[in-house]
Length: 581
Image 1 (spheres, rainbow, N blue to C red):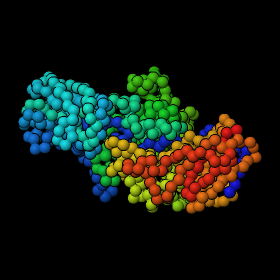
Image 2 (image 1 turned 120 degrees about the vertical axis):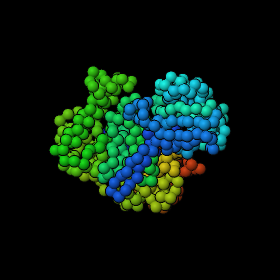
Image 3 (image 1 turned 180 degrees about the vertical axis):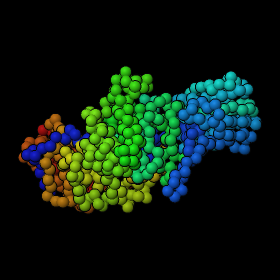
Image 4 (image 1 turned 120 degrees about the horizontal axis):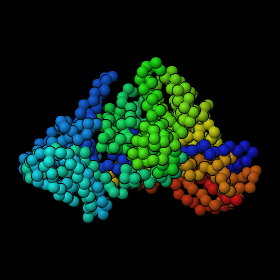
């Protein structure tokens, strides 16, 4: 089979960027990318449930904590009088009736503690008359693994304590415990346990390293709402103060089976801006609009909220919101050029919003309607539909893409090779029309094993490990291997799709073989594109998937070129051929 590439019709591909859409779903933030290891660390958890068309929200501050050791004489009670911070008013009163009693944190079902890694523990205690010590540490199966003694000050004031915990052994399923050495009573709040190797002091290292390997061109955040709902939005102003003063929200996805799923906002808009900077990606913050007409005062408040967000990101240090960014430790502007708006909003409201924002001149919009500079489109469809043919967008589009397959739905990763191959075929079609889809990403990005609500996801993890679905490598290959100029590419058969691009003397040809037969692809062109120097290939059974037990089963692998201008395409495979003049 021949593949013909031509320079007669080239398109610039510099706007054709692959990026990341980071949404707070599947415990992607708290319990995921945010490296904080304790659950409900400040006793501000909510309990959320649906009651017909209503959503009921109640305090759930004791969630994740229990008396410890088991059977000990200890009473735990949630309190709000004279709080540590008004924004987070709940704290725990701990009354130990016997020596060595206190409370334990479940820590997402158990923490993974690594030998030799330091973990920074901070917390606040208020004591009126207890003047002995507290033990803080990590426990496993009823026994302490590592423990520190802290002298408590009985001054009636909230006092901050900080210690480092370091284990001499690797531990799976550990819990955190706070115990009083002698019987007595104290108030405790705002616990935090962070590994010292967290990137920027915020992000879980293994997950962020996987994101960095993708070399994303943009980072869209925060998202994660339920389309069409009237639940609380992710409020950006609540997430840019000192972390301990951030007003915790419930996560709208809590009504989908995780009633205590919350947003501590420890990973807020400020941290997402820093994340984009760390990744070398340009930030695309996402906001939500109220479901109200433009004449409603709430609409005006939302417009002002967006103006304030732009000032926070781009304003000088002498502006109101730019000065806050400076106080948080980032004097330089983040340089926001794009703002995205979630869907589920009346078209009239979107039109009025776009008109107001466009007067600003230097900010462009991604909207779920044609009034924006780009149209936001989510394409989450069965793999079978993607491989039947991609219907190209009629307008310039910001696309979120993922494919589900029946074979993969019951896998631990919920992401089979069938779905990833369908995505590769779709992205080949999009690459050939790069000017119509300048922004491309996969969503959802992350999912914690046992806590997933939306699948398939790109990266799966638990407390100890992480692994990628085949879709991760597909996205990564398109991100890393798309040149500056798109070259026309055609094949002799509909079962093999092709696209090509050029950059700095290299010609990159991508080929998806959707058939169940091997194909020998011979590449020809109307220009001198050199010889084949590298072949990167993905292949496997359509029903295959990666898992904790087999994380490398379906990954991109280098294959030695066998000829200067041809390569073998195995059945159901995706290949990247790199030629050099």
